[in-house]
Length: 253
Image (tube, rainbow, N blue to C red; front, side, top):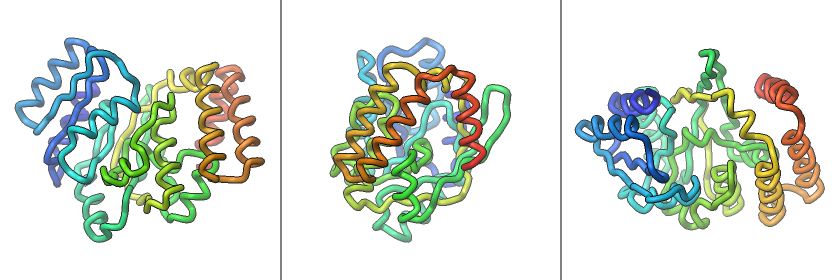
């Protein structure tokens, strides 16, 4: 089970976590509960149980309330951290306390066990340019300052784009957000990912993103509108064409 592998990777960290906050966004299955209960005897797990599904943004905000430390490492329950993930990131954060957010490179694994290295821009000016076009951070790789995130309003409900929304607000508020090229996680990308990136709900989220970019002056209104129009087209084309476009984009980055 993916969750078991995820928690095992946390148990193997060279720099162990002081606490591990797991948010139950509504009811979970019996099998998942068994896995958490097993690891609760080994790891410093805090369970945050929400009675109903409130959405990712709200769930993440609830989770932050239970995080005792200033630095929070974000990850999903099907991701695997390499052993030195926390050690490497916190070495950098301790050496430069001004950094508000630090992401890393990742390895993506699909359902057929094919892998792909995903490295994003590392320098501040490159990240800001990239953010005009696409999400500049691998969300499951970031470590951020809790206070810095709360200063810009925390997570917002923005379907499929909660992390991108937050990063844009942090960059617009001159928070120091960087990436390193070290590969510190393995991340699963399933075949249903493309299906989630289609349809009216995703188009609505694209419109919210377009308005946010204009509000924050992330790029010129003309560029923002051009990108919005292009991204809407991507949400309505057949899945096979979307898969081809996504494949080409992945090869170019």
